[in-house]
Image (cartoon, rainbow, N blue to C red):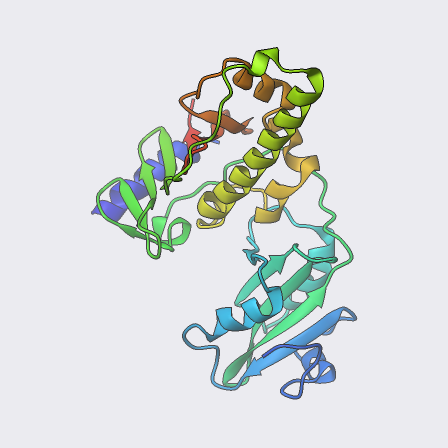
Length: 298
């Protein structure tokens, strides 16, 4: 009953709108029998499947300190990505999961495929991500089992992340609110005499705050956008790209206005966009370890 009520709320709120380059385990030529491509970067096979945490151990061994982002079959499709995926999606041996990482010289895509009684992960290096920016849109979402699969439902409207209890979601009829609370020991500094500083001093301080707020934005993307599935039409990596997000991000002028007051605001709006269906998406930070994303329906 609880899941039904939350599903209805979501519908109301949203419907309106051991690696190497080919290693000894699997050679590149062997991987080609799974998914023909000229861009194969490497592959790893598990004869009994990637059980437990081994799958993510393999991905981490390739991605290092970077973050793998899950590809959404219903999201915007980058032509470069689809050159790799289309042959598989149109075959009988369809991918189980697809991820992409951008924190390297060239984007890398990993595809988990069935292989005999086990599985194989095949890696492909892309020249670039080439989808043209499109307006932000909320998809029609009807099941929390898909959207919030990394969360535990604790009440009719509340979800808590399975691994991080300080990451929570509240689902109401016209609002979805994500919060992450991890207080900093040192609060963000606001100089009372900022307005009297020189142009150069102001410029440097604004740039410092801009860098900090971009970091906070990336934290919100990881906590909120990348921990859910199928809410937005943008793929996770599109949120990081200037050509997609620049007109929705806080500006240096707005930061200067905040600093000129010399006192901490209740929160800072880092990102604000109006989606195609009229929904408003805002991301806020206190600068002291509390992050929030709110989706509001008109």
